[in-house]
Length: 369
Ligand SMILES: [Zn+2]
Image 1 (cartoon, rainbow, N blue to C red):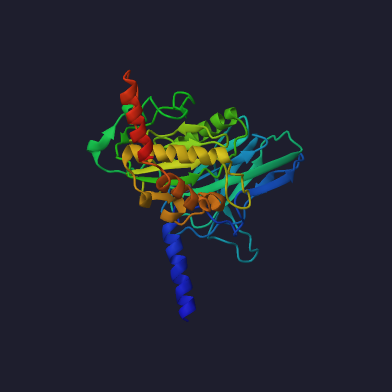
Image 2 (image 1 turned 90 degrees about the horizontal axis):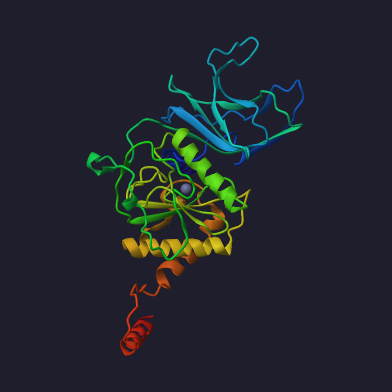
């Protein structure tokens, strides 16, 4: 009895706080993946099982993203109707056609607007619309319910600011930084909300693991597009992204509220590591990525005086697998490297002619270290 009570309580708790998590399709692990033979007769190339029941969630759109090897498809959302014919037990479906965008490399996002009423369960069906490949491959990285066109995080209108260079990190950084202009970021679709960084949260993108710099550029452009045009956010959700080569990219400017931990975005800097660091994908976390995380977080915590207790992994703040077991296992190491071993970073420029004074200053600095 007690056990049953405890379990249902736990389930309730998980449901209540898992609003950023993927929709469950018969417990199939993400990425949802399949390969199917394509013939002239193939109409349905792929379909998910029926989803979990979403009746208690509030949303007006379902978004999904992943990768396919042929763009000539249509995504549909099939919603079982109540008027099942009991004599034949044929289930009838209402069908919504998805708004689909496919990149050259096969990365796609799709959304289904469901604001006509409640949706409890559904499946995603991929329909052949002239696929040229013999085999159709699909991987779906994420399926989530979202609510678009509501008030955003950070509600004080006085804090609204338009895009401006002063919201970003300064020019004289001690590391290579790929700014928005370098990756051809789209401007935000609306004003940002200002904030002061006080926390840092580590994520993984659970998306592509870019093999080259060009792949990383394409992936970050894809993510911004998905966040703006499928999820309906004003800009890419994260403040920083790091690729497997250790490149550090600017996402949303650091001094504005991001979109990376639901209801906990204000004063929170989101750093996302590109790739999927969770079973079954288990991308490799490279040493150079780890170095870049340490370099970036050290800089941010020094610049904004952020304390160790306010350094989080996403799963510390919400019911999610993010940033994946592989990165999560490194969090204690990262914390120690960033916050404990860091000699107080001394930002004194020694650029003077008096050699004696310079030597004595250097001696002082060394003794501090
Ligand atoms: Zn996350």
